[in-house]
Image (tube, rainbow, N blue to C red):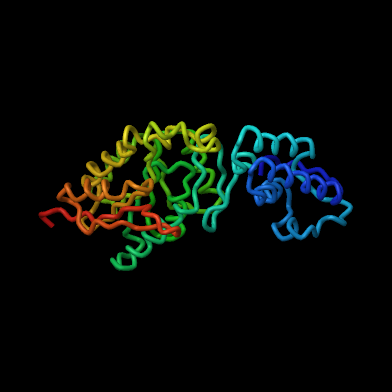
Length: 305
């Protein structure tokens, strides 16, 4: 929540505000469900209470801000295209609630599948959680690292980001979601974890992968408000992915997992890059729930092992 201070208004007043906000959202082409998402973030009301109007007859509804503030912020959503997640300062992701600001990307639903992919690999390998070390490179809000920490409570999780501000948000989110098996490192990719060479069970990353020429043409919610450093992957979008492919063999254990998210249309090139590096085997593409190629995995298996 944005503010712990509360105030009260009548249910009827909030009902009328919501009705007007829904109409303005439709007119602006904003998904109407975002109105209730916004109101949930600034009140104690649930989705069902809002959608069914169960609060309308109440003499008092507690809010974290005055209606004038709500109106001003909702206007920012409509005219400035500020993502609603930034307006309320948080977003749900898997079973987590994560603090988000414009210093970090908003975690996307499709990224949630990374955790399932890792869990499936771990089950197939039969490696005990206590001996696993996972690196989340470019952790941002900490979403992947925290979800891994929950999935493997006895494992060690390394969360790396070049942004000190992003790392602070990730630390806050780890505390908020009650996980303690994460170590945070500030720096560029593998640089701050050089002492973990040859020790990682897996390298997991959702790096910048948008081609530079495309970034400015993305929807305004992204290009005007999310951090470009976390979006821009260079000329073809693969600059950082190439680096991660080249460097990961220095850090992975034999049999370790390499996994990246990528943009639609990049899968074949990434798999080709991995196949050219003789340290990777079992190079595979993985699709998201929409059936779009979204992830590539590989197993590190050096020739001498």
